[in-house]
Picture (cartoon, rainbow, N blue to C red):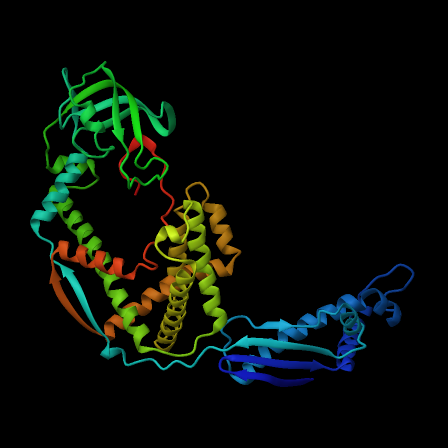
Amino acid sequence: MQVSETLNEGLKREIKVVVPAGDMKSQLDSKLTNLKDKVKLNGFRQGKVPMSHLRKLYGKSMMGEIVQETVDGQVTSILKDRGEKAAQRPQVKMTEDEKEADLILAGDKDFEFLVVYEILPEIKITDLTKIKIERSVVEIDDAEIKEQVERIAENSRTYETKKGKAAKGDQVTFDYLGKIDGEPFEGGTDNDSKLVLGSGSFIPGFEDGLVGMKAGDTGVIKVTFPDDYGAEQFAGKDAEFDVTVKEVSKPGELEINDELAKTLGLESVEQLNNVVKDQIVSQYGGQTRQKVKRQLLDALDAAHKFELPETMVQQEFDNIWNQITGDLEKAGKSFEDEDTTEEEARKEYQTLAERRVRLGLVLSEIGEEAKIEITEQELQQALYQHVQQYPGQEQEVFDFFKSNPEALGNLRAPLFEEKVVDHIMEIADVTDKTVTKEELMAEEEAENAAAEKPKKKAKAKAKPASKAKKKAD
């Protein structure tokens, strides 16, 4: 067998392998000899089938197995012997000529093939202690906790049926039928819908139309969907809703006490306050985490410049591009509608693909040097959380991941990344800065706006106009 390098350019490698026909025949003879003592064929005693007959029956298929075994073994052996790590599974190029392939399978021609791959670049990790991170920290005050508790109490407020006209703060139970240009539209109908007047949860103007109505009243409420309404087919359109009021209820007293806490599965108001505080801390902590992580990734990206495997970048770009063009198609938009061109968008997303590949390799190298691993328990917990997102299909989803190692790897990757980020944060120069929640939100919005590329993105599919609500999330 001859193994020779035919290309060594940057990260690209090409290795030529030549297996003499005689070696292939020897392997075939060995396989046929082992088969001879086991196979049972009509007209022959076991172990007495002539080799020529076995070769005629099984030679081609067995030579196919030898070809595959040779390829698999050489791909592994080449990388091991050369001490190289392939960026992706090496590509094997064999002859596409049918006659030549038949000669190889017959053992009458040398088996030649090329192993083509890119190696992972050598990465020298920067001094992580020199990475400077400013972490915005929000101090939680009692007023915010009180405000959140009051919102919870508001959602648990009881209502008592009243006679007379509906006013702001009352809860109205009603049926409605929405129409555009005189025709009912999907998602514009509901029965026994409940709405607290003044909550602002319906289309602007709708609640005003219910003020002054009483049980048994019917009417028509005219509204205009906002121009930025999530479901684009309704945005900016005029609509009419036929409404029938079935009940008007006045709000009961807003009570924040141990009884309220118990209805929520807690023991006391004190415990409720603590739970709310923890939720607020977690909320701001999550936002701070994303902001810090973005700073960290930006710093790592700026500090590491090395040649990237073209195949990895292309694959990442294809994933991004397919997502973007798919979103545009669903939205019925073009790149021009998004204030850019296809050429400009390709450049932007090519840069994004390169950044993602670069950071992925850097984080992987840091994690490997730090011996960071994902335990089986951590992976199973992530799988369980993912499965819970598909109620009623839990077993099918679990079976899918169980039989697809690649899909399971997609769950492992973000866990590994977060662990590496935690590791770097322990080493980096981190300075805490106390900010208000408004300042944290403003920083987040500014950074998101600056990071958005191209200038606009294809909008995600909007939810249907169910219950004619104002927001489509």
